[in-house]
Image 1: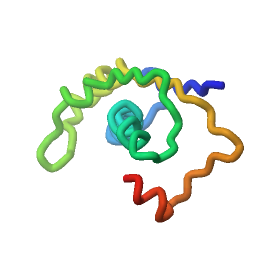
Image 2: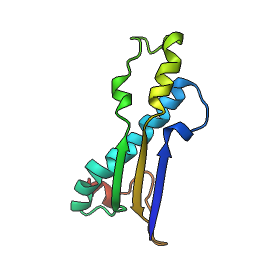
Image 3: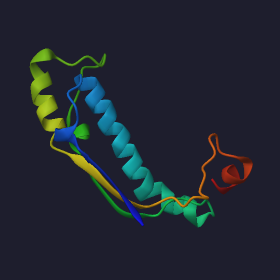
Image 4: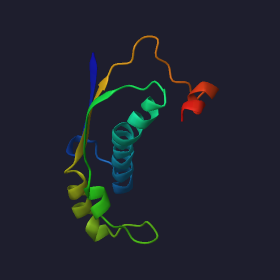
Length: 114
């Protein structure tokens, strides 16, 4: 069984620009975790869900600049939002089995694997 997670930026609810950017960054971090770190951790024995597909298209996050103090200029907000809403993320993950449980925080055995 597979689980599909699809985030289409243009379909996300209306929200302040900083919240939209935060949500997209969070989804990009998840995609990059499954693409870059999960395979390394799995090689060390940590049981993780396998990602059959990781398609992350959020490069606009890198292209957009904010003022040094983190405040956006109001005149640029609409253009930044338009550009942010052009991307998205798609993850195709194996479904967790009934017995799969990830402790939070990680237990000692899970920590040794990292």
